[in-house]
Amino acid sequence: MRIFDPHIHMTARTTDDYEAMHAAGVRAVVEPAFWLGQPRTNVGSLTDYFDTLIGWERFRAGQFGIAHHCTIALNPKEANDPRCLPVLDLLDRYLAKDGVVAVGEVGFDSMTAAEEDAFRRQLELAGVHALPALVHTPHRDKVAGTRRTLALVAEVGLDPGTVLVDHLNELTVDLVDDAGAWLGFSIYPDTKMDPVRMVAVLQRRGLDRVLVNSAADWGRSDPLATARTAEAMLAAGFDADQVDQVLWRNPVEFFGQSGRLLLEVDEPDATQTFEGNSLLRGERVS
Ligand SMILES: [Zn+2]
Image (cartoon, rainbow, N blue to C red; front, side):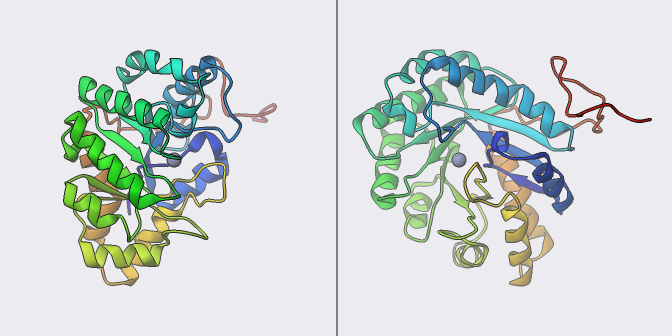
């Protein structure tokens, strides 16, 4: 089984996670730019993070045989912080880089005017750079946030087929489906969408334009949620080809619209370094 996790925050995860993901079949990921938990206090904090996503984290993933891509944006939460807003003027140079496969995550957190302004500007950037957009929907007031999201996509004039609306649940799936956008589902260990609910959505809705992700980050989350969903699909009677469509071919099709997927990964070589840094620790005994 080959798995593409299209939304996971690997900078917050360990090398054990990378090993377990590879063992479970994960061969490619997309890491959306997001917030850190701790508020950022200046634009340099964001640009160092973007450089990490494009550089060090891609190297680190490659050391475990996993192809790493990222999406770049000012996240919805920090769009409310005037200290972070100037990064919007620097996004062009990041959106031009290899392995940057979408603008994201953009969207709404608390549905403020500042969030909407940053969201609109970044949707426009997606159009300018001919990149897909990865949209976060709010955990509170999700239906209203999803409606406003789809209205904004239409106002900006983006093709909905280039927009992935993420963190959906049973209440928002039809709204996004009817708009023609891609449907993203984040599988969480305790709350919200779990593998069993996900399978029920797939049985009702079908498999086209559906992406399943772990959204694993620094909070309680499960980097193997994609593999667990694949197992739940098989247990419910879906076949291996249908699992491959949802867990591999759909994310390849969606993010392939960027023209920038880097799915070939060299054989891991522990002696390799990135700007002088390796993943090895201590003296090696030969
Ligand atoms: Zn996320």
